[in-house]
Amino acid sequence: MSGSAPRAARLAAFAEAERAGDAEAMAAAALALADGRPFGADPGRVPAFLHAAYERSAGRRRVELAVALARTWVYASRPDRAAEFAAEAERVAVTLDDPTLVAAALDASLLVHWGPDDLATRAGLAARLDVVVAHVPDVESRMSAHLWSLTTALEALDAIAVRRQVHALETLAEEAGTPRTGFYAAARRGMLALLEGDPETAQACQERAGSLGEAAGEADTVAIVHTLAAGVARQRGDRAALAGEAAVYETFGLAEGVPAVAAEAVLLWLEGGEVDRAASLLAQLAGPDFAAVPRDHDWLLVLATLGEVAARLRDEPRCRAGLELLEPYAGRGVVNAGAVAFAGVVDDVLARLASALGRADDADRWRATAGEAYRRLGATWLLGRLGAPTATAGWTAELVPGTAGTWTVGTAGTRAAVPDMRGLRYLHLLLERPGVDVPALDLAAAVAGHGGVQQADVGELVDRRAVAAYRQRIADLEAELAEAEQWADPARAARARDEHEALVAHLAQSVGVRGRQRLVGSSSERARVAVRKAIAAAIERLAEVDPALARLLRNTVRTGRVCRYEPDPTHPVQWSL
Image (cartoon, rainbow, N blue to C red):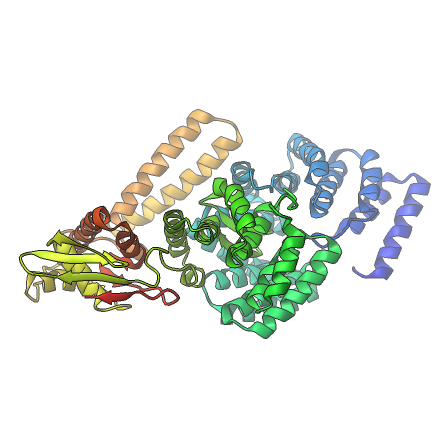
């Protein structure tokens, strides 16, 4: 039910139940009033109704009301008021030994611990929730567990877990067959499509989520539709659409007092070409040093968004303040409420802030770690807009073979001579073929001066059945570790963790890219190892004479069975070869 008429009926039902002293009817009416409240909206009198019913209830009903109170206060950006209710809900639910109630209480606790400094607590609670719902048929509990696991996986930059949880949501939607589960699955698939740089799929998911959300009466349908639409507009560079979304975001964000929405409007105005509007709104939201940004569950998202704008506007005072505030969170993914959107990694923003302040070495360092994270996640659009090392952007780089076994190398007008190395010759061949995949075996053969003879593969390090067994054991150990941590059994947790790490390391050595088993004695495997080591050694040697050139090559050269030099199109470097 939604709209003014159902709300009026619920208010009347609550008032009648209160007059009659009917605690059960009061609870039912209060829970109905709290149901479907959109995130960020003012709660009005809903907390008062819930609390009045809560004080008259016991047992299961009291847990349900405590959970609703916690959620309502968090949605109203008051997690401080939510904490006591979430804690009691969890305590009573565990006493009642009801997994569905425990799952609801853990969800409430997760909402309370949504702040930027609570990631470890949040990850632990999400793992406990995942264990609790393993044998619970309740669809809402299972969906909650998947959403929290997805959120923490994005924050921790765990690419495999991210895709596993999106797939799990889609499987749940297929099994449940309800518009609500379909809405959540489509919305998160759209998020993943944007992360992977696929705006066409994201737009299709936006349309599906909008349709299913309306059918389900989901309060956040409009927010999801606009979030996906804004992401699609950004990736397509559609300025008209960006300006339209910016206006919607600004109106809602300021009217409802939701900083994360208003901050997104600043970025959308900037990318829509409205620089003055972006600068004005930035000053309004951030103040001179970001002290105006509330340190709540959206603090990291707001600061990262506004920090990027400050960097792009070359706003030095705010760049300095943003850099100081964000640096402790390097290595973190920035996620919009419940994995609705992935906003990038903190290191990306740090690189932009440092670059705007002229701190080239710091900018290059953070840009390198951001690039590594984006490559691991498969975040192609974010990687493409990251930019090249500042020290080399706009310069000519040299890697020229000379006489008497030396090479001339350098950037930005600085040249040096280095002795010949096999890795330099591999690099030279790759730089001559930008954007082209070159098998390591071909590189090795070309540098050796012959076509190469591929020795037959003589066997796999680990056969397929063993790989499957290892993976199953790893999954079992993950569940065992979560359970041990839930029951505060450090000895059991340590044993599970040690075995898990050993198996993962062994499997990583035995299985290649995309799960392919590595082959013993094959020419391609020996070439992969030899070329990788030679290129790494050459880059280390170059770092001694030209750190900027070494950083450039580390960021743009990929090694493996197939090697590639992938130049950054937004910051071209003219090579002299």
